[in-house]
Amino acid sequence: MVHPKPFLWEEDKALNFFEIYKKICVHHPSSHAISREMIVLIFFEETGFCNVRQSRGTGPAVGFGQVEIYNPDKIPFFAWLGFNSDRNKRNSPLPLITPERITSDNDLSVKISCKYFQWLVSERDKSTLGALQAQTGGGANLTIIPVWLNAERELKSVIHSGDRMKLIRALNMARSGGPHPNPIRYDWFKAYWDFTVPESELISGVPE
Image (cartoon, rainbow, N blue to C red):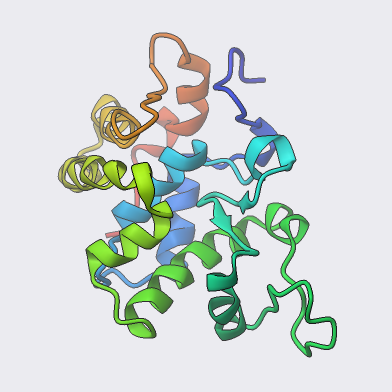
């Protein structure tokens, strides 16, 4: 059991870095405007790789990437993906997307965020910056974008290095700025990092 654990992180709902990156590779092309490294950093910044609902199960955002599934702007995205996210549309032939469906299915949770970025770029003609702005929801949250971009550059440079501490530092860069800086310090949460970046998986690493 991981103890102490970061605030709101739940071990039974979590994946480690290698597990979640491999799932991203299944659902997201390597050549996309939003890189796989950016998506894994967003997952880390949002939830520490934990498939949960915001605010202990009461908030609007859900999953590793904390997608606000019932916002009106998400209705066309989920229809494109094959789900209904309009709770008032009871006669929809599409299955209703629910927080429970997402938090009980790690693969679906990863897929939703990957496909959301793909939809923004291919169907809404968003640039890299525009897609990242959509992820943040705007306002003060926009200040996290330069933080993500710096972390992305760092993670790309170390992801195949086999250096565990460099990976941990790169991940923490994504949580070290913006409106609510909250890095998960190695010296405070060693058991969390043993779970999240296990030494045993450094040799196999992540897909190219």
